Amino acid sequence: MMTGFASFIIVLLFILMVLASGRFFYGRELKSRARKLSRTFHLEIPNMDYSFEQIVYFISLPTNIPSIRNASRDNLVIKLDYKSLIFPRLSGLKMYIKSEKEKILLAYLPIKDFRLPALDQILKQGKINESDYRNMSTCKLIHPATLKEINEEVYQQIQVGRKRRKPAGAADPEQRTVKAL
Image (cartoon, rainbow, N blue to C red; front, side, top):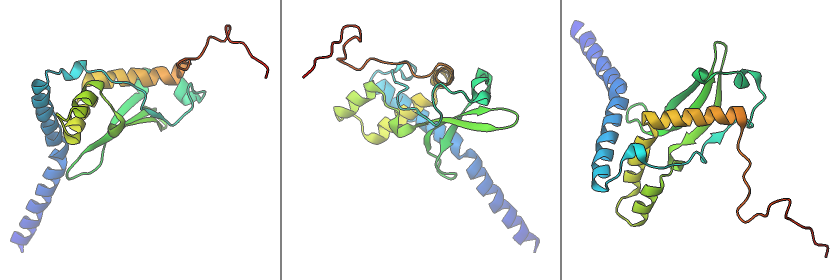
């Protein structure tokens, strides 16, 4: 009877160990493959360009919601969003405002939409495949400097909002004339 219980405990501990270490080994494997690819193509992951355009906001920008508007940068939390427990894969970033009373989801950045122009060119040339692209872009996304920049951008957006941009080819409003048909 004791051996059955001991076997159950050993199996349970093994399962818990696999679940607890999956993300750690996923991160190590990502960094290892990304390091190899970055050496091959002479790229520096921390210095690769990207844009914030693909961040999906769940609130209007800028917001007038007091709990969000009055939040400090310290209240903005970025959480890595994984797909699976056993074989984890990063699917994106969730950005929250966390206070003592509530946790409000502000924005989401899916990994599939996180594009890097340097990798786009290499992918187009056929030198890497989609899996390599995803590994390198994931490694860039979880880099501490990138997370800090995203944190600052989201905070700026909730405070100031998206900057109004003039569409390409649009004339200056003062120079525009209306012609009657």
